[in-house]
Length: 511
Image (cartoon, rainbow, N blue to C red; front, side, top):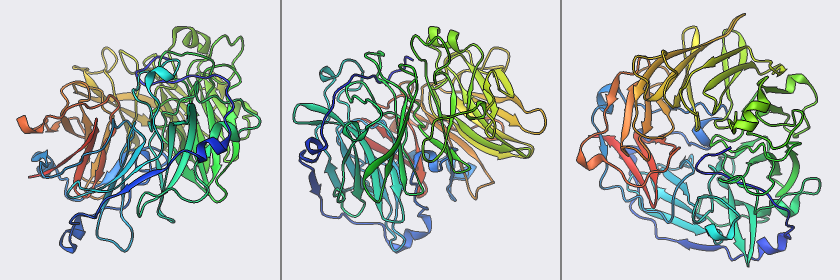
């Protein structure tokens, strides 16, 4: 599995005391002028997880983002948005129930977690968890330095945020999971949890295991996925760890039987029907299927899948292994359509695979398989319903013959019923590799698909979700951004679109 942010595995035991000894440096800044009650109508519900729900649908309700207003988007030059470090994780949005003040929560590769005023971009608090890991310290990888890469998760019931960090404890590299108060960023009692030293049944090396995927929080458990690093160095496995929030301890873990098979998609763990689903990458040297190139269904307790109903792998999984064509480049997307509970996975082989998530069917058990892209599909997805089907957007060029123009952004239509289908609905030009989200004014009307041209034209783009017509074409000279990372994931909240970049969060709003 080769993509530009990846990870690996080795065997090193590091005690939890080493993590606890890392100084938790917190800098609390004076609260800047906050949004007034006059703008309370523009505030949004908290965005507590990657793509706004555990399906990872990327759907947001933003009442003022009509087609007309979207055409007048621009960078808010008054929004400061300065943070310390590169931002690979999606920003989150927090607002306490008794507050009119929204906050953008940002985690960076320098292991800073920052709260920004959602209106002004002023820093409200900035907490350094522990020193990040420099590139030369790790056996491979291309994030420099490496700190927090996966999107955190917020627990709105307690006002807490949980983040997974690659960090230094003395001279040792550790994989630590922190719980922080959203009031001031301070580390909560009992945290951090040292993942490597907390596992008894699974050998886990923070030098080899990298954390890229989004965290998931449900029913008192925090789920953290692991894979390798760019370059596929050392032996790593696809691993999911469950941490009990109440007791700050690892309660369960699952890993692929074979080496590699990393869980490295930006969307990480998805959940549906109170169960977990992950996609895995290529394994190495597996003579029989051993967890790679698959959609894997896991119970909340992370019990080993024990039937064909609990996994799907393409019949040519060995070829995908050998060719480094991971099924795990994007997270699995649960879909409810036509009376069916389905799940979709998009592979680096350019194919879309549709399975029944109540019975994944084992090897070759897909309900539909369709070539949908001319190249590798890597990144997050967005989905939204329409009569008779569900539409799914991904960053990538459509397969030959699927669109008159296939460049950058592709939208599929999935139907259910007795014979589910996958077809290509529309395509649009997108110069860059940002992941799509979709907004609507009320959960139904004036849907707009948004994506940033990360590492391309570095502009924000908006398209009609119905047919791909251009709604916002990137703006003027002052609306170009700098230093966006591929797979850049947007946040929609408080009447704005927030775009993460190196050292900065941009805020777009209508004029």
